[in-house]
Length: 103
Image (cartoon, rainbow, N blue to C red):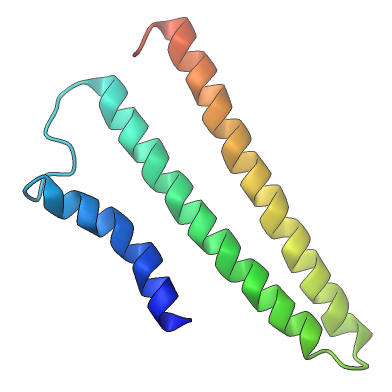
Protein backbone atom coordinates (compact mmCIF):
# COMPACT_ATOMS: atom_id res chain seq x y z
CA UNK A 1 0.00 0.00 0.00
CA UNK A 2 2.90 2.36 0.70
CA UNK A 3 4.26 1.76 -2.81
CA UNK A 4 0.88 2.66 -4.31
CA UNK A 5 0.81 5.85 -2.23
CA UNK A 6 4.26 6.85 -3.51
CA UNK A 7 3.24 6.10 -7.10
CA UNK A 8 0.20 8.38 -6.80
CA UNK A 9 2.38 11.17 -5.43
CA UNK A 10 5.10 10.58 -8.04
CA UNK A 11 2.86 11.40 -11.03
CA UNK A 12 2.84 15.19 -10.53
CA UNK A 13 6.52 15.16 -9.58
CA UNK A 14 7.47 13.27 -12.74
CA UNK A 15 5.51 15.79 -14.80
CA UNK A 16 7.43 18.64 -13.15
CA UNK A 17 10.74 16.90 -13.85
CA UNK A 18 9.93 16.58 -17.56
CA UNK A 19 9.77 20.35 -18.00
CA UNK A 20 13.21 21.05 -16.63
CA UNK A 21 12.08 22.04 -13.14
CA UNK A 22 9.54 24.61 -14.27
CA UNK A 23 6.05 23.30 -13.82
CA UNK A 24 4.72 25.26 -16.79
CA UNK A 25 7.13 27.61 -18.55
CA UNK A 26 4.36 29.77 -19.99
CA UNK A 27 2.81 33.08 -19.09
CA UNK A 28 -0.67 32.31 -20.34
CA UNK A 29 -3.15 32.74 -17.48
CA UNK A 30 -5.47 30.05 -18.82
CA UNK A 31 -2.73 27.43 -18.83
CA UNK A 32 -1.59 28.40 -15.34
CA UNK A 33 -5.15 28.11 -14.01
CA UNK A 34 -5.62 24.79 -15.76
CA UNK A 35 -2.45 23.35 -14.24
CA UNK A 36 -3.40 24.55 -10.76
CA UNK A 37 -6.89 23.09 -11.07
CA UNK A 38 -5.50 19.79 -12.34
CA UNK A 39 -3.00 19.56 -9.46
CA UNK A 40 -5.73 20.35 -6.92
CA UNK A 41 -7.96 17.68 -8.47
CA UNK A 42 -5.20 15.07 -8.28
CA UNK A 43 -4.51 16.00 -4.66
CA UNK A 44 -8.22 15.85 -3.74
CA UNK A 45 -8.62 12.50 -5.49
CA UNK A 46 -5.60 11.08 -3.65
CA UNK A 47 -6.88 12.31 -0.28
CA UNK A 48 -10.38 10.94 -0.98
CA UNK A 49 -9.02 7.49 -1.85
CA UNK A 50 -6.95 7.45 1.34
CA UNK A 51 -9.94 8.54 3.42
CA UNK A 52 -12.14 5.85 1.87
CA UNK A 53 -9.51 3.21 2.66
CA UNK A 54 -9.23 4.44 6.25
CA UNK A 55 -13.02 4.43 6.60
CA UNK A 56 -13.21 0.90 5.25
CA UNK A 57 -10.63 -0.21 7.79
CA UNK A 58 -12.61 1.52 10.55
CA UNK A 59 -15.76 -0.30 9.47
CA UNK A 60 -14.05 -3.68 9.21
CA UNK A 61 -12.46 -3.41 12.64
CA UNK A 62 -15.56 -2.00 14.35
CA UNK A 63 -16.82 -5.37 15.50
CA UNK A 64 -19.71 -4.72 17.88
CA UNK A 65 -18.84 -1.03 18.23
CA UNK A 66 -21.68 0.66 16.36
CA UNK A 67 -20.23 4.14 16.87
CA UNK A 68 -16.97 3.28 15.08
CA UNK A 69 -18.95 1.71 12.24
CA UNK A 70 -21.06 4.88 11.88
CA UNK A 71 -17.87 6.99 11.91
CA UNK A 72 -16.55 4.90 9.02
CA UNK A 73 -19.80 5.38 7.10
CA UNK A 74 -19.70 9.15 7.70
CA UNK A 75 -16.09 9.31 6.54
CA UNK A 76 -16.97 7.55 3.28
CA UNK A 77 -19.95 9.87 2.81
CA UNK A 78 -17.82 12.96 3.39
CA UNK A 79 -15.11 11.73 1.03
CA UNK A 80 -17.63 11.10 -1.75
CA UNK A 81 -19.32 14.47 -1.17
CA UNK A 82 -15.89 16.10 -1.32
CA UNK A 83 -15.17 14.43 -4.64
CA UNK A 84 -18.50 15.58 -6.04
CA UNK A 85 -17.71 19.14 -4.95
CA UNK A 86 -14.27 18.98 -6.58
CA UNK A 87 -15.64 17.75 -9.89
CA UNK A 88 -18.54 20.23 -9.84
CA UNK A 89 -16.15 23.07 -9.10
CA UNK A 90 -13.98 22.01 -12.00
CA UNK A 91 -17.04 22.18 -14.27
CA UNK A 92 -18.08 25.57 -12.87
CA UNK A 93 -14.58 26.92 -13.45
CA UNK A 94 -14.70 25.67 -17.05
CA UNK A 95 -18.03 27.45 -17.59
CA UNK A 96 -16.70 30.70 -16.11
CA UNK A 97 -13.55 30.45 -18.23
CA UNK A 98 -15.70 30.08 -21.37
CA UNK A 99 -17.80 33.08 -20.40
CA UNK A 100 -14.73 35.22 -19.68
CA UNK A 101 -13.04 34.03 -22.85
CA UNK A 102 -9.99 32.24 -21.43
CA UNK A 103 -8.84 29.24 -23.46
